[in-house]
Length: 166
Image (tube, rainbow, N blue to C red; front, side, top):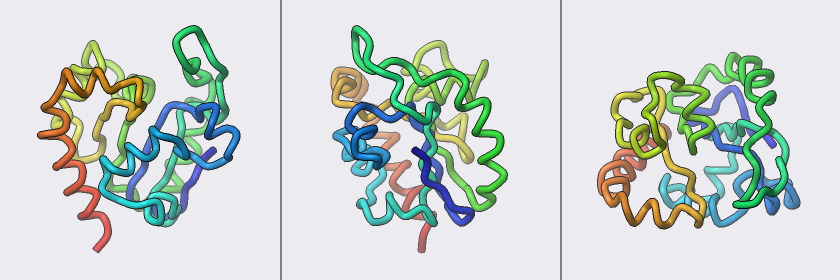
């Protein structure tokens, strides 16, 4: 499930569609998507406008359910499809890397040893990338343990998103 247009200024690289999104056919059409839109400070109209926002998962299909939640994105999708997609998105100015899979893929050895370390070093990856934790309700304990994310990262994220569209 990809949403993109050559005029998109913001790209959101997520994991893979979950069960609900797989059933609805709409990316981020779940509680995680509602949280992500709140973090960005934009409504569904802007979020689902492909001329503004490119939604690019690491895995393009629902990977199935495992013992502790959804399985990881299928590993062949991003290396196969992302290199073909990025040249079609020349207007991108900011790419959000949501969760550890996109961060490992795009930041590689420059990423921290943990998701927390990577997100904590968010300034290092600007202006092109901004790493974020996954907005899943399962990550509420992480958010409680890391109040700096809400205090420091979210205001900067919202300011950068606001600056993309006059």
